[in-house]
Image (cartoon, rainbow, N blue to C red; front, side, top):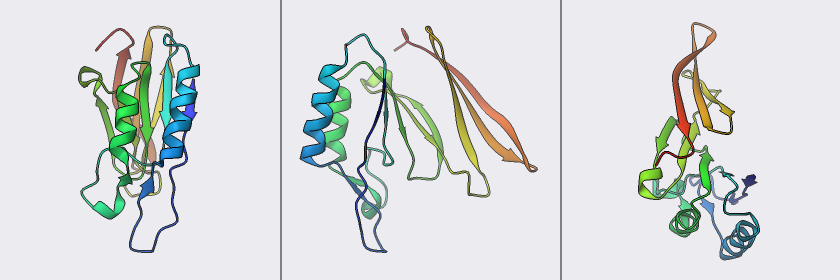
Length: 147
């Protein structure tokens, strides 16, 4: 199941933070309650839930979103953007999902991710532009029963 969230917020030109409102938290929790525990969930949001090194670029109430995510072991991926940095972190050992930020296709070091799902798990291929051509720079397989 893919669940997308809109935490965008109109901000001044010197700020770019999002907001995980109490209403959105309630709605997300209600929706997640309807999804069977054995069904895998991919949660998508523009903002990472971890604080940014620039406070005016963070998700307000990101810690509340993190608590919701930690309470659902069937959220297997959290896909986000906003940082424009390619990153892949398997945080399942800490009670969190695999976190992916594909980076940005508009930067000089453009990047994107290809996710190939199977019943066993997911293979993530990270692509970067090199000499005007897309190249796989990283390939990682995640099995559903790994923690």
